[in-house]
Image (spheres, rainbow, N blue to C red):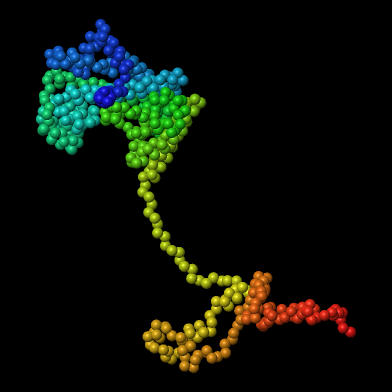
Length: 507
């Protein structure tokens, strides 16, 4: 259990997991032979700058780390890049046509430049850590200024001065007022010490080495961006030349990039989780489940909760733009960035709509009521409907008022709680003969069937049925009359006292 814990701590303490061993192994092999003395002397003058008089034992025990700028492959690549750039300067500006061999050579240089740019980024990080270890007067400055070249510029101004406030005017050119105040307060209580002359030389040498790395990185980046805009113009117009170069370097070329689906493009360049990254010591910080496209300008312009959604949208358009450029290269057609600019504008408008707030619910007013009476068709059906719902004579008398006549109490009369003409002394029109109109039934098949069903059925002598027939009037039917005739006929012919009778009519 303890051994496993110690192994995990050893992995966590390793801050250089991404270091390329190619040029280091060659440098170590050179330092072990006869020619290693000159290389060790150069290294001592470069980064560390240690001398035999100061900390001689520590320098002898510490193994010197080789520099990336001394790597032969990087030097040869820089010479090839400069040769291509000088050849472009000698060409007339009007001639942009290149042969297929030149395109292939520039494509190889672009891929190699991207690999060297990754190595330069790691080397800058390692040189920054080395500078933090070497600078003792103000150790708290490392946590206050986390950006590499901002930290390096502040060290160049402060140098070996323990009173940081004396350098505030020079720091004001590279730092903000809040940063200067924070550094001044932290510098007043620092636990650092002054550097010796040899240590100060080593610090200045490391600063110079960082400047050389930065200039080399800028040179290669400028070369890649200038060539990528001509090699894959649509891809560059969509995500930028720098990201386009990184994608081509990670996939191996434009043809290989077109074979990758959009769902996998968004994961290209994803950082692997290691013990150093889990401990917060990774050289590159990038969102989980995201690669190079998370650094795209379109994605960075969106808020954090929309970044992953924006990466998916950019990856889909990137796959189409890469295939457009590849088809133009293979067919020999003119390479244009029209497709990339079109996709860029579409995504920009779409991301802007994503950020718009939801529209408030609109409270709509009710429609204007239609108070006009609609015209209806006349006819028998409408007349019968009016008869069914028409106002009765009693309701008409109750709604009428006698002119200049008292009716009930004053309060009821004022509230309208009166019987109208029905409460008249003469009795109103209640005693008058009122015409009684019977509601006529429809003479239809359904109504006739309903009447037959109501009239049928056996009943006892205590009830009688009243049936409406098409003939006006009422017909009373005795339900037992037919039954009595049947009983008398049976008694005549089949009773015990009937005897023998002839069925023939009597003469």
